[in-house]
Length: 125
Image (cartoon, rainbow, N blue to C red; front, side, top):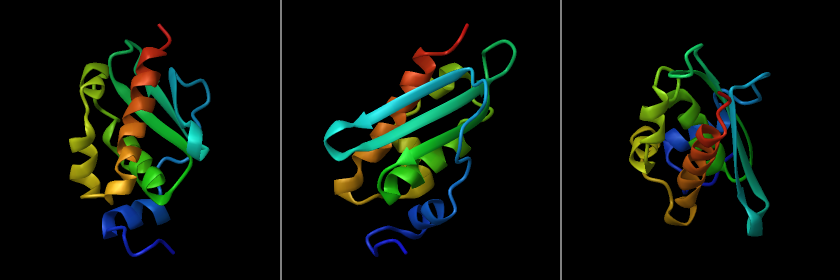
């Protein structure tokens, strides 16, 4: 059970996260780490043959409920987007899906986007 401070959307994504796991032979893998809190997010992307569109996204997260929910929401948002569209995503896109998150947990959406930027930077050509 999640604490009452999380809204219904965050709770839903935490209790029933989408796209958890890895993608074998992923075209891109990105990582975001919070050193002081031992929290890790790893994001896996599969791209189309032209490396222009994201066709699949998955994640592994070791962190708070909001980190799991944010990563889950991100992996639902990415498929179908171009690499350029994904690179332009900001916290607003995740907050539109999840609603407002507790202020002390707000950096988890930023961590998801750091993992995305890292994955895009590590895209296999």
